[in-house]
Length: 242
Image (cartoon, rainbow, N blue to C red; front, side, top):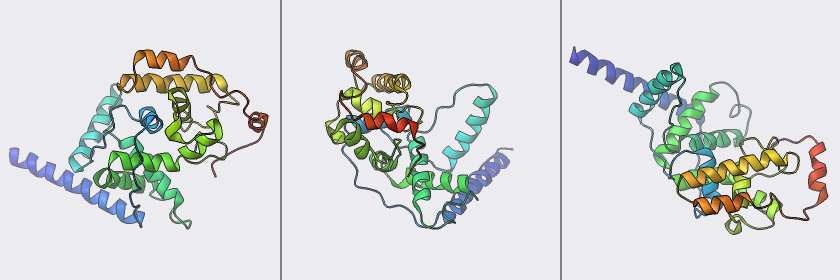
């Protein structure tokens, strides 16, 4: 009986790895890792809004993929929350960014989209560091309006590079990518404030800021006084990712 169980386990893991390699073959060109940014307050806030643990990217192997699948089915059936593999959510976002950036309709085709995205995110977890994944995400994520990348968003909203953002500013920007139009601080300031405070709480739970720092940041204004009224007027115009 033990031999049969081990044989079945070997077949399962081999099938998972084969499916991963097939999906990866459909991706085509693989991304090169970026030069990792220094993990400052702004990038840590992005991580905290997306991931639930410390800055770490756990490689996903055949056995972890199989275990994740079984655990997800089990917890979903019990309406319990599934704890994701460290860094897996950001790796998935970066994989999607890469596929959308590829030239030609085939690269963005919905055919096998999820399989290609999953395979690429697994590959990223095996070959990139957490800092490299975080950098790629920060450089390619959409912040609403015409703003792609953390640097563009920081300069538009606060007139400074990301490395100079203070806590409440970094938290506001980190809360935008989840739903850029819904959380737009000009069009929906109360929603933006709520998302900012969620990010602050996550930073505090991770031990990256203190309770005092979180409460002080929550008291700060949402945006600098005197930003152009044209920004607020843009609420009436339809927008989308470029």
